[in-house]
Image 1 (cartoon, rainbow, N blue to C red):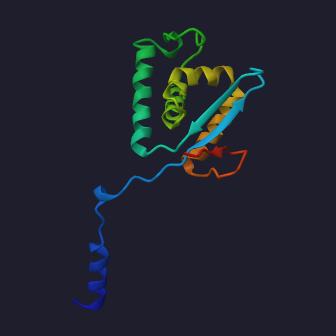
Image 2 (image 1 turned 180 degrees about the vertical axis):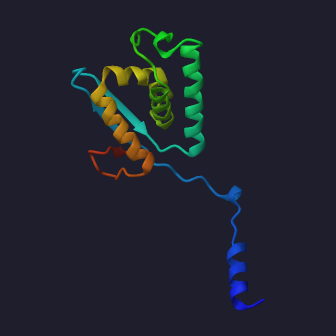
Image 3 (image 1 turned 90 degrees about the vertical axis):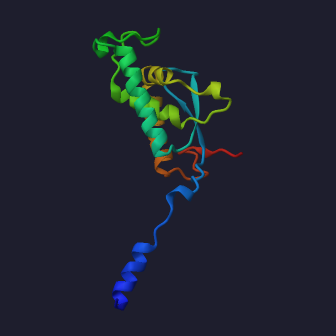
Length: 157
């Protein structure tokens, strides 16, 4: 075996054991949102990026919830709670709300919004929902900078 072959073999052998890796610490960021459609109402969310397994689980839960809401009918016939009557539920909206739900870290846990509550926020506070979407994408991508008031403040603790 020549030097180049030995070097190539060493590179191939430098394999890690992925089962011994530790999960990365995920920072939390808090931001408050308002909407001109709902004067005096605020939504404060504490979000943290979710791992791929939790993101996929959120999507699976959204699929199941869509099936429960719509049944054999179509989205226009969904069985919705008061406040969402007349809303056509899409899988995309449920996916977005479910992922946002999985990202929430408000304490106590009862302060976290359910998927359908997040859908109601999307329908009734459209400006806030757009800003929540931008913020949650920044959190998930790791693009929120500590101390940036426009992007949210990191929480301590």
